[in-house]
Length: 261
Image (cartoon, rainbow, N blue to C red; front, top):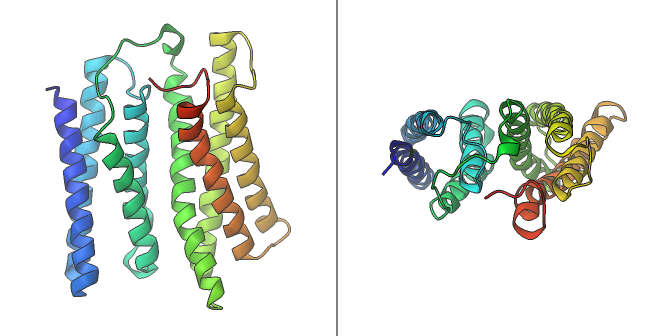
């Protein structure tokens, strides 16, 4: 068994264990368990980073090509976002939802093909290290925004506002829009080299643009028109659904140059 796969399993096991400690923390109402939960997930994230590094050394190119690699990277980024942005005082809804999302992705990864395959010559470019990470970082910002947005929507039904979460949501959406914009632009430049055209209306390109537009509307209406936080939250949820189809649906359901193998 390749060492990168061993560290992958270690990462997943530790994140699962940390999440189980979180469940016990909620059940027993033991504050110390929240800290222990995060510590296990921190070690799991470190193991995941080692898995990426080792796989890169074994492959000699960035492990961001196959469906397993790209989904594991996304789940890992969401775990990092959870550790960095989700605090104990944010409430259990956001905490639990983020844990459910990235652990759900890790669970799916357990069943995906992990074999290292030869790199497609069209992907043998340094743009791989710019385009894909930019897109994945934007998706991680949108993933956390999704959890925060659902909380804002639920709180609105109870007549409650949370300025701190509203500011966080706005910052996440704006960062995601900028990063996805970088991903789209660099992808277009790369496409010119690989396929001879900057834009071919490939399904992945089209849905990435749709996702970008939805989140750009969410950012602009909040910053320029000063729409209510809950309005931005609803648009963010719609953007997350479009993002999920861009990420998973296009690759699994539609013929695309970007289909993961």
